[in-house]
Image 1 (tube, rainbow, N blue to C red):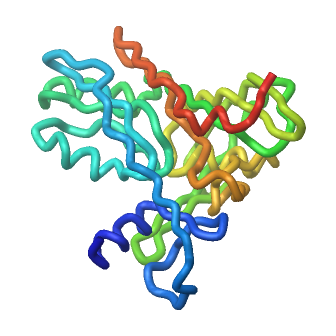
Image 2: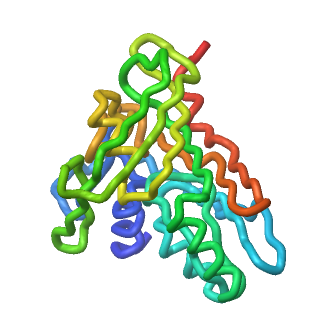
Image 3: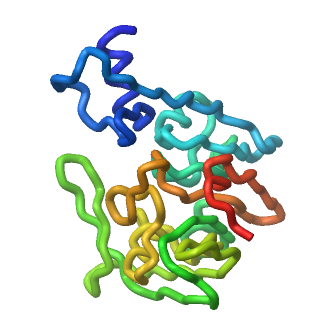
Length: 233
């Protein structure tokens, strides 16, 4: 493949070598180095009508890349590159305005699934403001009293050893909210190299936008196979 194609695969986080994700495109390596390249999953249509398009976004694809595949529609919500799941698009400006009002007034139900490091055996409410800054175009968030209000509620689902599968419902939609809140609570998300806990056998953030409800719509995206890597009982 070409150098540019190789760099594109690396930038998307799809390439691993020696058990770790490759993060730079130029380096001296042994000539017998073996690379594993993960295939990028397709964008799946969950539902559409005259007003709304609901998609199941694969990980390793940015929200903007998804939007470029559907240029005639208007993006309503964003997901981080390594977060999969429900993404919504408006098909007309009238519906867009109504939908944005629902998001702004926190009337949209947003449910995520995550696998975290730590035992979660009871409901946890994290009501901490989040401050987001940008450095060289990259957004970084943290819990800070100067930030904007943010609330996440964590529900236990399954526990295996010192790892837990949890449901997270967010009332707000701050940048990297769930990743920051869970790390703040001492429950870093597995595979999150920035806010959470990297893992040798995981090459993505184990966070999935499972269910979104807006108006009378109720959309659900099936959990990816990466979430079955741990044997939860």
